[in-house]
Length: 522
Length: 115
Image 1: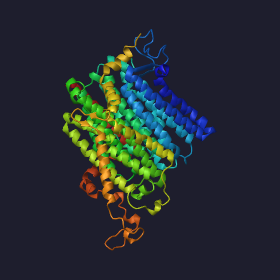
Image 2 (image 1 turned 135 degrees about the vertical axis):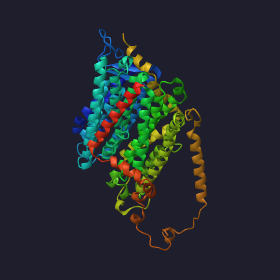
Image 3 (image 1 turned 90 degrees about the horizontal axis):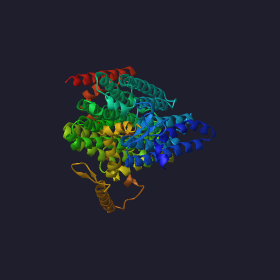
Image 4 (image 1 turned 120 degrees about the vertical axis):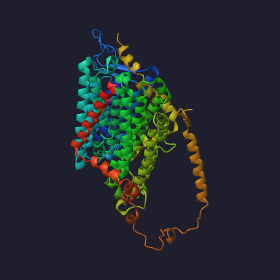
């Protein structure tokens, strides 16, 4: 077990990668065996992730150096700086990995029936597992260049998966837009990494953080990194590609893409807190995050309420919810240099924002899955053509209600727990933030009520006489996420104490992140 | 207690809410059970009554998504006109926004650094 934990970080990346290449081989022999391989590998990753999370909560940050004599040796004997590929896993990385592992598993199970009638399923699961690899890599990597590499893996596989259903023209357009935006964002990330490397001859985040000077070039690199991750996360006004791409992908993939947006948000937080940290002009950068967050919250929800396409509707809501996270963490960043304000409300605001990432990772994929279930059974994403479906799709309707109540922040659901943390803490920073958050929550409930009425309520429509409930695997995929919502709803304090606050502290405590790299020099 | 979340200013306990929901649910069920039971199933008594008018077909009487919140959209017509303008669907425009936001961020960070 100790060995498994020592190599846990790399195994979590390697297992889905290996499974990705095995999938087409096994798939040629048997589809059932391929599906079992996908589920077993992802299930094993879930177990590993939770075991590693427990280990990190006890023993602190894990460092894993590839190719070293021992995984914890970050710097080769005749070097003075770390040069190898290093994974650095702390509380924040683990939180992201936990939600990514659960959503990936749920999405894979949901996919079995959702894409059952499509061709090229072997390629679908290969790409899905590659995207899982890319996501874990982004969350675990300790160096900037590998962050770029894993971002590329996640983006390219994501674009291919968006365009997977080639029979629909809009999927090709969505995939094209996604790959163009991703490629340009990745190039900007690479350019920024080049700027930093040119000055410091370093790529490792911890080692760079120790020497970074916040020169003019560093500021330009920060802007490049921040805006590149902002467009990839889908923040307003850089969100325009988001609904075009996310609404046309298979619903299971859309659920996963939401978490890749979280991963890009995580990368932005990692750059701000762990790389630049106290060198940063924290109030200015914090306010940049807050402004993006506020715009996303308001424009996202007002655009969502306007939509008639159920998946575009869900996509705009995802943008709106991402805003809460940026506001919460942005407030924490804005007061990072002021220990008193950080202790008074900054840490709570960050905890609220990070807690909302976790909650959003449960209810948003669930809602996307319910949207996919509606499309799967009715053949349309147009809400104006739907109605009365609760008569035929009872489980989908119930799961939709759970997701709706959660996203709208209705007590006692988990969405309320994170929103109350955000509201009460950011109020002390600026009351407008809380007021906007509450207004956006009301509009969220209003728009989800509208969509629920349009799709599920009313008498049975004759054109959907033959509609039935979705297949079991789709129900199971949705139920996994609903179970996550129920668990967080019942035990908010357990989740905050064990996962959220350690994640917030991991971001705040830049010294520990640096020490894990530099302190390990033999 | 793992259920009680301290927000720093107050506390939040979902279990209390769940208990309240269960109690209210039992009360609603109890009151509902007191209702009229002698109606005749599958007769006109259970059909929709619309002041004597003919009841439209299911598809015609379902209020579609485009008709909901008409007043909200009418009030915010000017806002939507402006916001929809930027949603062109053209990838070139998306990248222009990206370049603009990046340039603005660089300027803000550099100007803030001067102070």
